[in-house]
Length: 250
Image (cartoon, rainbow, N blue to C red; front, side, top):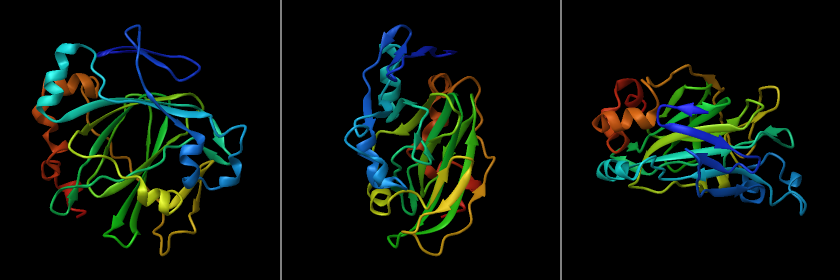
C-alpha cells in the first residue's frame, strides 16, 4: 500500500511496517473487549487471546517531523484491524469518548481509511445520564476521512471483509475514556453481519440510527496535509474552530 507519506505493509499477525521498518504497536485482544460484546459467551479459553487489532501511536515517517506534531500537540496514529466475526458482530473497537476541550465541547478526532472499509458508529451522550440523543453511522472506504465531532463517542467496525488499515489525527492533551462503553456493554446499537442494527438493551429511549455521508476534505492524506499546514488542524485542540455544522450540536 503506497501513500504520499510512505509505504505500508501488513503481515498476517497485523504487524505494520512503514517504509520497510516494523512498527511497535499495542495489541487489543478479544478478552480486552469482552465487556462490549453482544454475546460475551463467545469468549472462551481458546480464543480469548486472539489479536483483534493493533494500535500504532505517535507514528512519524521521518524524525524531522516529530517537532511539528509536538509543537501543535497532535499525534498521528495507525490502526490495523483483523477481518473476523465476533459471534454475529464484525470485528470492532472497544469504543471511547473524549474529555471536554472547551466549555460544552469535547475534543474531536479525524480518521482516514487507508485500506478496507469501515463503519463508524457515532453517538451523542447527554451529560452524565448515559442517554443517547443521536446515533450516526458513517461508512468510509479507501481515502475517505471522517471527523468525529465534539461530544460524540465512537466505535469503529471493520465491514470490508479484509484487514482494515486506518489513520487518525488527535490531540495529545487528553486520554480516551472507555468506561461509558464498558459500563453499558457497547454502543447503543450492535452492528451485526448483514448490516443489521440491534438495539443494546442496556440503553433506554434510543433514537433510530441515521446515516451520514459527511466526509472531511483531504488533499493527499491526513499525515501529509497536516505537515503542509498544521494550523489547519488547530480544531483538534480547539473545537470551536471546526465550523457551525458540527458545533451547532452542543
